[in-house]
Image (spheres, rainbow, N blue to C red):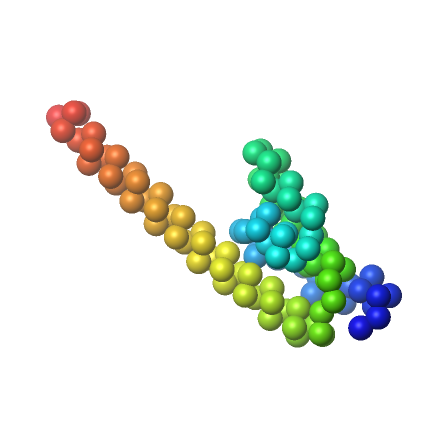
Amino acid sequence: MQKEDRNVVPREIQGWNWGACLLGGIWAIGNGVWIGLLAFIPYVGMVMCVVLAVKGNEWAWRSRRWENIEHFKRTQKTWVTWGIITAAAGMVVFVLIVVYMFYSLLPILT
C-alpha cells in the first residue's frame, strides 16, 4: 500500500470504535495514535475516550500500514472484544467490592 492511500480513509471503516472507547490510551498505543495518550490524564481521559471512539478508526487507518480493509476490521474487532472483556471484569470487581464493603459494615450498622 502506498503512503498516499493511507490518507484516504475508506467509508467501510468510518464510524464509532468501541475498542478505542473502552480501552482508551491502551488502544491508542497499540494503534500508534499518539494523541490518544491524553486518555491517561484524569478528567481529560473521559473526554478523550469519546473522541477516540469517534475519530479512532480514521486515526488508526492513517497511523500504520494495513494489509487491506479486512485486516483493519479484524484487528479492531479484537480490540472491541478485549474492551468488552475488560469492562465486564471491571464491573464484576466493582460489584464484589461493594458487596464486601456492605457485609463488612453490616455488623457496625446493626
